[in-house]
Image 1 (cartoon, rainbow, N blue to C red):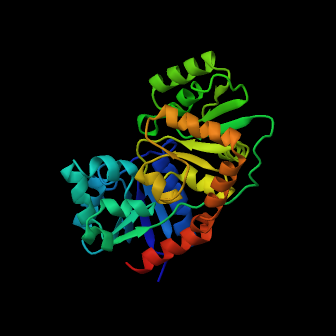
Image 2: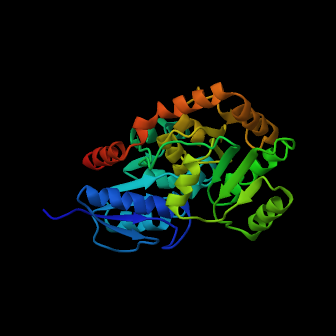
Length: 317
């Protein structure tokens, strides 16, 4: 028998800076390592593949319907994104119906299972996105740096760290460095305006992945202020490198960091985030505790664990 042929359908086109495209490319590499031939498509109407992996219940629904019509007996895997779980499925009948089309559901963190019905949970698998450590956590000693990593868009509440920094006006050694492309002109204008009036805030725009990971390792903490997340890969990257995370208290973050993690703040709460930032600066014990807690979860995010989870998922089809 020849190599199985898989198609990964993502609404993000080639060259896109969206996380869904990056996820599709990563998964293609894993499936190829497992012996599959993999195509990545933004749309699908016909083809000769054996398995479809669709990202996004709403935006990939047309491809899923076409697959079911052409290949009613061939496996269909639906990977649920943050917008699927926490925005579209509860209110959009078509998005919700996509879950019934799929043979298996894939989620990126365990708390996502709480959004599914008992029948849907039975066909769901949790696959954590992995990363390989590129070096040790080495935060600077002369100042306290917080990294914000991710494209600037509404769901990320991207300037929350800058707003929190403004609540710490008398601390010249506290800095926020933000990386990511502005996906709307509004965010670019606001980031530039913040940088002009606040010297401790720097927006670097989009950077190469290796440089971004270097910044992460040389920060005291990563700030993830998202309003919704399916399971942000940057949190996996922080965990693998032992970098503490200050995260909004949403299921997508809790599912990766754990319920008892002490680094949460309420969504859009600048004052609460500022208090955590101040504690990271003034309480070495808190930094050490967060570091230890993220390190305790590193085994969940190894490439071997992710590849093994995919192997089991495919074997069960």
